[in-house]
Structure formats: C-alpha cells, structure tokens
Length: 317
Image (cartoon, rainbow, N blue to C red; front, side, top):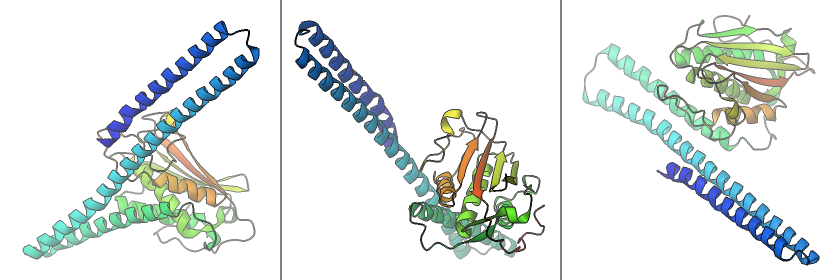
C-alpha cells in the first residue's frame, strides 16, 4: 500500500510545483506591465522571481526522486523478506516431515537435496545483500592478483548449469580470446566470480522456460577483454537500459514470468567492473528481443596468471 501511496504523491507534487511556477510567472508579467518605469526594481524582481522558480523546480525534482527512491527501497525490502522467508519455511517443512513421519530412503534423499538447494538460495541472498553493503568500500586490503578469465568464466558456467539444471545447449560458452595471456586481468577473484555469476543468473531468470544463453569471451583490441552474456528473454526497453544498473532497480517482468531477486545483482556487477578499471553495459532492441550484457575489463600485461585447469569436465574452447 505504501508504494501506491508514493505513486499517487508524484503527480500531486508536480501539480503543486506547476501551479506555483505559473503564479510566479503571472505575477512577474503583471509587475512588468504595471511598473515598467521602475527599471532597478524590475530587474531585482525578475531575478528574485527566477530564483523562486528555480527553487520550486529543484524542490519538486528532489521530492519526486525521494519518492521513487523510497518506492525502490520498499520493493527491495519486500523482495529480500520473501527471498529469506521462503527457503526457511521450506526447510522447516521438510524437517518437520522427517521428524514426524517415516519416509523411505529415496524420499529422504529427495528432501535432503531440496533442503540443500534452499540453503544455497538463502546463502546467495545473504551474500548479495552483504556484497552490496560493502560495494562502495575502499579497494585497500583487497586480494588483487592476476586472474585467468577463461578458467573463471568456465567455472561460473559449470556452476550455473548445475544450479539451474541446464544442458550444455541451453548455456553455452565460446572462447574467442586471441591468446590466454589476453584473457588475464588483475583483480579480486571472488568479486569477479560474483559479477559473472550475477550476469548468468540474470540471463537465466529473465529467459523464462525456454532458456538459451550464450556466453562469449573475446578481446577488444589487445588492451581489453570482454565477457558477453546474451539471452533470448524478455528484453529491455530503451528507457530502462541506463536504469537497470541502479541499486534496488528491477526490470518489470510480465505477470506470466515470476522473477525472484533483490534488485542488487546488476548494481553489484557495475560496482565490481568499475572497481577493476572496467565497465558493464547492456544492449537490447526492445521488449521480447532478448538482451546482451557485456563486462569489459583491462588486460593485465605485466604477467600471466597460472594456467589452472577448469573444474568442469571440459576445457573452455
């Protein structure tokens, strides 16, 4: 109810501001007609009137932004509450069932697997909130080291396949880097892993039932390396392309697509990319056309990260 109240307040503040500006302009015009001979007073009146109009406009803009920010925070709190309560309630239900009934071994294993998945979901939500809380913290004392994006991206893809129960065709990885040395960046491995996982989770969530996500690792010249994640999901309107990386903002999804999340994933990706001297941006031709998210980072040229083997069953091609 609070969110709808905020939305109703926006036209009210805009209307009040417009009326005050119109009255100020009318007063100024009337003053010009009546007192056109009083040049000095006229000039002072114009200046004061312009200051009043500017103050009213700025105040109205500030109020509208505050209302929208509060609306986003309300949505964030509701989303986090749901993301925390749902897995906890599920785990409790399965534990009570195991405690009160005798179930066969197959059902018991199924319950255990579901509880583990709920625990992973709960842990993921907590980690996102904590990571967003320290997103603006200083880069001091961070473990900056050479990181091989080929290996890291492959590990993230394998983990997403298992987490979302996807096949190799549904979530594909293509390596187009010129050489292994041009896929090495200087950074915090945990942060970079979190950024890539958020991009993958976002692509899968907004793809609906027909998931087909393509991850491409490629170079932009010899100084930059890109991780591109493209999907065939709901797409993004042009007006939202610049807003989706703001904290708490969530892309409006169709009623048929229930998207879970806190509105922090893309914000975390943007902060991590910026912290590593890079950037992240989104491309889409509009609703229903899918989208492409690209994280671009500078290549580390002073050394090469160890060619560690991916944890999956194959090597990134």
